[in-house]
Image 1 (cartoon, rainbow, N blue to C red):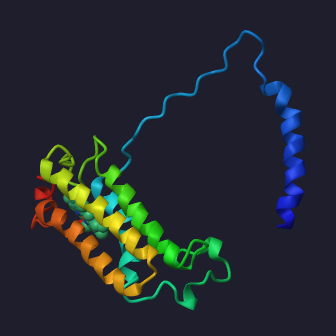
Image 2: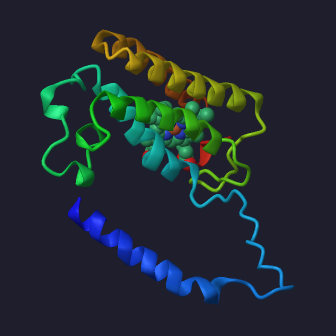
Image 3: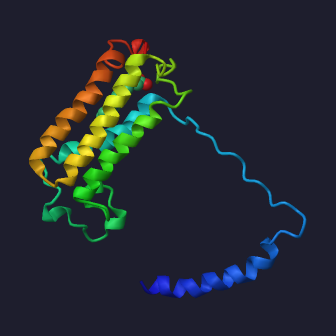
Amino acid sequence: MRTTVLAVPVMLVGLVRNLPAQTPSKGVDPPKPAAVTMQVQTDLNRLMRGVLYPASNVVFSAQTDNPGDVKFVPGKDPSLATDPLESTFGGWQAVENAALALTESANLLLIPGRKCANGLPVPIDNPDWSRFVQELRDAGIKAYQLAQSKDQDKMVEAADILSAACAGCHRKWREKPRLADRCK
Ligand code: HEC
């Protein structure tokens, strides 16, 4: 708290000092920011490992560990917690947030240009792909709603719906004896 209070006047002084230099001279248009577009930075496998897998584990864990437990009350330094359940936004809120992250991750599964780890394009034009992505989105929303009830029994239902949404798509595109046959 003390540092915040001290930092504000310093920042204000800095702003005032810098103001004249940043004001564009009359008649000159300020430079336009470059248009930012959607970009694909990783393959589907890494997206699954980095975003969907950890978020779904937070939802799944709520079946066995009650997020309302006192052990999930933010600990000594919750801002540094690597377990979302023990973080500043921990407990049931972490479960809600993980469910929302999964819901939003459906959009990432629809961005054109992503490849699977074997180099094949993610089959986003296949109607079954759209269907499975929508199932994931619906499962995320449902898990979010169920987490809001803060009722652990309901998380069994949430986990069932979610894992079915993952498994449907995996059966069709992931579970292949050869990596080369994924995403075909
Ligand atoms: C719309 C289809 C789809 C949905 C929905 C989906 N996945 Fe995947 N997932 C895939 C495909 C395809 C692969 C293989 C990707 C590759 O090889 O590049 C994959 C790979 C993975 C992997 C990496 C496996 C490995 O071999 O390293 C994990 C982990 C994973 N998914 C977790 C999940 C979880 C958890 C969910 C649900 C919350 C989910 N996925 C939902 C299609 C999907």
